Length: 249
Image (cartoon, rainbow, N blue to C red; front, side):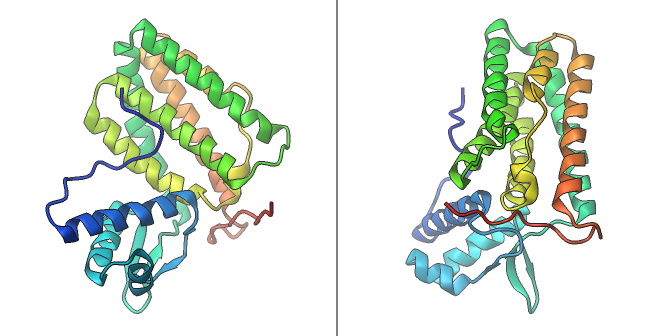
């Protein structure tokens, strides 16, 4: 089993000092984007990052370009490099792709999961629901706790894909999860509670052994998440991405 304690990209081996530095810069910036330290719309200066990381501009530029290719950043003439801020249409399109990927993942899980795999997914789902209970009860949750919940949420979905047995499909799902993880890092949607037993009910469908039941459950699950995100993350105009209120303490 892959250790899912952190969200990690699939990275090629470093072949030179510049490659090693570029890899380090890539990981540092990526982590900050996913944690919300650099929220959607934040400008990133190559020179400032190079000074902070203690390296030249070249590896930083390579790292930022790779993050542009990943979809986490965007770069425009006379504007520079920024953390990508999604439009409503882009969010909807990404969720359409996520639904297609995860529906296949769910079908493979239903067909291939053994008893121990099903028990693991049911445990993870129950734990994930427990982690959301505090939000539903109105408990104040700090940034680190929110991050831990979101990371575990991603682990759950990636573990379903791993058990399904397609490494390429898992990798594609992880990439889409990275984008959504970044977008949720600083929006109002990140603090919204989920319905009771939200993931436990999904896990039961996945463990049913019926690929069609699993498929329909994950599609409903993802469409619910999309509707919630669209209603919470945009102002009434439907155009502007709405950030979560800053919290102290």
